[in-house]
Length: 265
Length: 205
Image 1 (cartoon, helix red, strand yellow):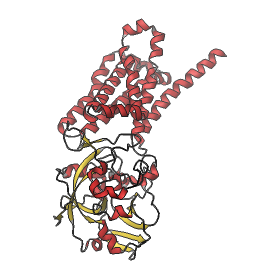
Image 2: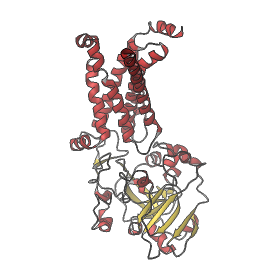
Image 3: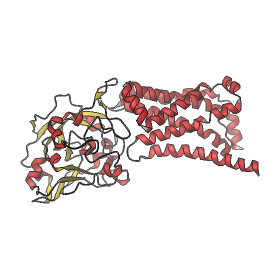
Image 4: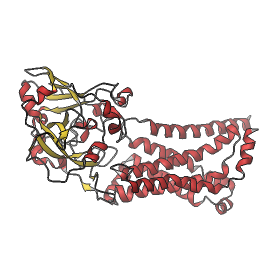
């Protein structure tokens, strides 16, 4: 069991079971079906693991995961996760604020965005042998979003090591954005000046914007975002209303003051 | 000749055997639902599986005539049951969406119907199958006349195309499966178009 401290940012909603969280995943590196990651991620080597941190930082380098984790206090953060496919879960992550890592490597004043990349290793990630997406999986945040205290790097679930299908050994969690922004199995973090390319935006820019904040008023072109189905509620569980910023508006809304979120979707 | 021998052997197999056979996927689904084999999101699994079987039956129904042209094997006696069972699966698929998925939230359903091409196509496919299901009986063939009945039942092409496009438009990225269904439908319609074109040329020549 990983030692963690509780967080004031945790929701008191009931978390989904570990079976639900680790058995129902979108992780196209391991296949397109929700059950594929659990079936295919076993072969992934997560130790040794290093994360290259580069770009506009004072201390760039190839950081070993142990090095990144040394000296950080791991917290339990129980967050809602809202998928762009209009389902949701509640997940007890183990992690630490991305800001603590960025502060450690020293973000230079010219940096405006953070770009992330997932591992590319087709011999262990069978989905990467096809071209379902343009590998590596890429994601990005604006610097203020990356520094927001809600934004964490997660290394575990339910007080245990991160299951491989959930993005072991280290992944991003950005709870006010659709799930695909929370990039898994990170090997590269770059501080950059220009808005980075992101995988789903490259795949279909009309449907997936850079921000991808949870927003019930801005529909995905192909489906409504007004409500969601909470996984695990049973067969007749009622749909629930989707909340602006997935219910995290108090912590994040001010970052978007003055922006038209129908344009910056 | 092999085709003739198959046709002769099939004479002993009545058309209605399709009904119990086509119910097998449904019974399997019911069993999987109660045994928990559908995973953590059974509603989506049921919805997708029902739609998938409906598409499979639609493609099977469309394949019967080209199969006879190509091989001489005639399965025409089974086609009505295939079509009616396709309609049953479409109805169950739609009912799952309305009751268990979107849960009769009419404002969202209305917005979906007006804004979402994949919902519109699904509804179009369902709508054109209603007259087909209602006229899938001998009395209707007599009433409409064989030519009129056959013309009406060309709506099957619309239903199959709408169903396959409905599937392709709702998935993320480009998975293989919906493309295979659409490819199958387009190929089976193309075979008809080519043959009808040739016959028209032969008539005018």
